[in-house]
Length: 199
View: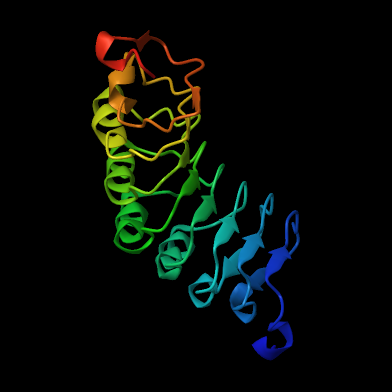
């Protein structure tokens, strides 16, 4: 299939395509917004050709580590939704940290995010305005506090349902002065000290 037939296509939704065996998205190289959600079987390849992509949603879609690694070529990406994709490894985070520096929104709930992944991403992706890390039970207080201090532009932050966050101190996000929405539900204990009173 030649890409010439899709030169005017900027938005594409392939959600709930449960029966594909091998989906190559490389022919849609002019697309700015691509949604492939709730597609749990088959293989998706060809992301490295989508250099015009601004928004990518792979929520609850089967995506292997090699595919996630290939996303590092999407240097114009500003919104990435990955909730329910359990292959967000340290190697993937390191690769993304090198090139996805324009990201302003990352949803990675239920992605098995570790402390190492969190620190790597937060240190590099300092333009993030939205970060959803709901239900990533491997994230600990020791990593969350220093990692989040890099994200001074945050407006929405979701750390809910993270069992290993035991004593989350609001001082960790006191530099996020634009914060409008904060979800800490089901975090064991939240500490509010004088230094964070203005949040």
